[in-house]
Image 1: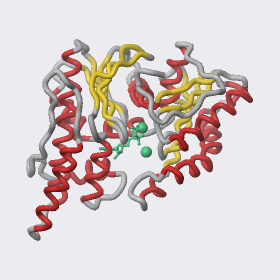
Image 2 (image 1 turned 180 degrees about the vertical axis):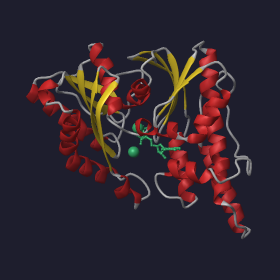
Image 3 (image 1 turned 90 degrees about the vertical axis):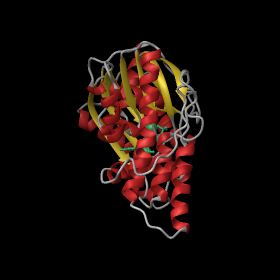
Length: 334
Ligand code: ATP
Ligand code: MG
Ligand code: FE
């Protein structure tokens, strides 16, 4: 089946055509990063407006690149939750208009499920069950993917998301937005053992996270140096911060897989693009099989929406034209 995926939950307007959930025929992404950069983060009202300007063109480009017409599509899949409500609404309205005018089924996709499904694109052999770490700008979860459309949360952040911590620390280090890729790059020239930013653990049976302590640790550390008039090497701070975050992410993912007796682990979301996280998991994975998407499928894209949408489609999970954008929705529900 041919699925058109549409994504507009944050600051990427994206559309993709995906065949049978795994074969990406096109993947068009129009990012607003440059626009939000000057504010140091995503401004919701601006995001909505920019999505509105881009969405039709992005959809047409996706069809063009895939060399298919609207008539060839079997369903329209769209991210409807969670995310910025005004941003989501642009994708949802476009998808409803297309589904109605083309008389094709409408599939509602959960953005976090889509991030997880990004792993199916390049790993044709990957099948559930597996345990997935989702670490993105707004979420940090350990999720059991029991089946293509069945998910269970095993652990989650109690405060900041991992990506959020990367973005905030990058800001105080003067690295700019978005912080993840900048810290990743800067850390390559730094000493990860320069400073120990204290991790929080909730006991061996919990796979929950807390990142606000690590973030505050970095901020206080820099403050102290500043007051004493001491200089520091930015790369060392970036590397030490990154090490602290990445260790907890890897430890919880592997711990959860072992506890639940699952032999496959995967990572997803923007932070899954992090080179130190990948290296840490390769080091610790033991006899677990590790999967991760290429960086382009880690951050927001619509190929993952087309992929996830295909499995919801197979499962008969259709939405009608009353579909609305939902800012918060648990990944276990769809
Ligand atoms: P959510 O998916 O929770 O709604 P989002 O869609 O904004 O949030 P993503 O696009 O999945 O988030 O990921 C963006 C986040 O990933 C940002 O916080 C960014 O800093 C982080 N990120 C991207 N690349 C890297 C990297 N190489 N290392 C660490 N973090 C990264
Ligand atoms: Mg983004
Ligand atoms: Fe995302």
